[in-house]
Image 1: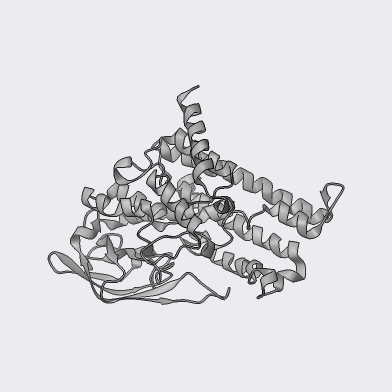
Image 2 (image 1 turned 180 degrees about the vertical axis):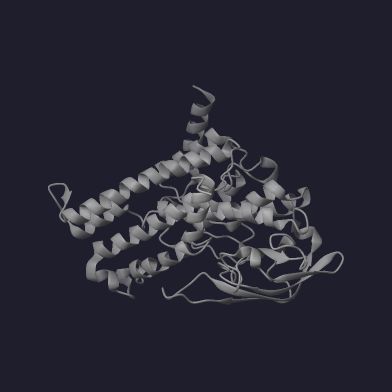
Length: 392
């Protein structure tokens, strides 16, 4: 057997032994996932065990270097782990902005001290992060941010407001953009800093969306002390890091298009709901729409896998993240448009156990924000036109 075949068999055996049965199904919603952090309450003992088992091997961040708590797997091994988890429908042991966004930025730009301080706790799910980027007057035009960091020698004093801070009321730490040189040009004079959300002067306030709930907050910073040893990269050089981190955020948002709508695929949900006759869905028009969506989803999954392989080979994501973000969010919106068609008038039930708390209409409404967060679809199309298609 080759080394990879041995690794696959060992991984398969380990997962069979260590993945609890209840963790072998897709998460039903964001609340069903494991986010970790200082204040996290596990939904079950098996959820806790699954995180602990995976984190002990560094497999919550399988491609990260072992010296920072990661799994140290190469590209081929990480792909095998993903395939073997999919084989038994194992859910992710940890959903984490630390893994998806700030962790890659720290690996690329952080000091050794910051890496040692923050990366191992991220892998173990001990620290939950939120992102302080958007402001009331700086969303798509992020470089126009005005949240200030006043230099006080060994620290900054931060004042201002951030908005659309996902899970800001539940996070332990924030990675945040501050304008630390007010006299510099627009994209200059910005620093990426890290601080504990319990620091005096940090106040998150939840924002309610039309879906009836929301992960978002507005976050107020009132004379917040930020130590200079918590600056990622160089002071006043944070814009380059911010753009790098945004590519990972767009990848994450784009991946919404690949997430199953519950425990079944869209086709399975449609077949169960509409009915099947002679092995075919009864409604031929709906059948065609669902089939087209599943073909597009499969093509998108293959594209995302190719991009992942390119990243692991050192090519980077760059402008391709805009393509993934745009198509993935449009795919997710189409999915829930189809969910409305599949369920018919039942899709309008807002509350009640039979509707899983109105999951379908609330999720449909929530997808409308996908084309805004992480950079609007219009911004992504401009990036694609300029940097991928070369349309100047």
